[in-house]
Image (cartoon, rainbow, N blue to C red; front, side, top):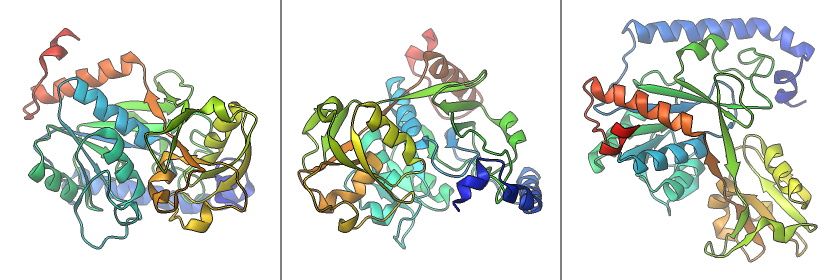
Length: 339
């Protein structure tokens, strides 16, 4: 039985595991109070820090939002830098700067994707404050975006954004291990923004994905509209948090799928994307950065771009300006005065 069956249904095991969730929540509260009272140190930096994270386990779309934020802030005259934990990266040396051609097996798939798509400097370290310092030593950033880290209280933050899946939402609303929550739901009151991947409820901001073209892994400059595969049978490969949404997107465009689902952050081998036929193989961009060594003419990936409402951007800038007005070194771009 998959643990998701317990987390996202009223499965009886959820009730049996509830006492462990209460112990987990108690530990979370104690840890948070230790930071609030200064018993555990919180590290502050000289520029504003925006945290993008989630309350639930698994992928909810943080990386596309981080890319959107970085590009949006650059358009407003900011110089953003991005930090990440480098989850499942195998390097033994931290912190490190990440470049578009960095090895995702060493530094993590999401940081490499961020370096490729954001056009911003990226640094990784399991200790995020070290990633921040490393970034500021090498680049003149005036705002930091943290990919994940909502529960990493050791790093002080100025704005918090949580991302939520519109279908799974909070599951059975229990904390680990009985449910998918990393923190109790009362944590929502501390957030600055709640962004929902898909349909949003009151007080939430909807994030929609755009992506209509497939790009070749072999030659990234070569692309074809997704509609060109309508009616064709293909292999669909996904090693992400919720692959069903990716598969559904392909099916919605009329593709017939042989689905190959791998764990999130899967370390690929050639056999994972090589099949005994001539069918096209289509994957997510997050998977593509790890599969380049074995790419052939049959391998394609679907890049996606986040789209958020204008109101979200406006309110984000308003909050960031308030941070700047309270003594941070971030400078306000002249265009912001018109918002």
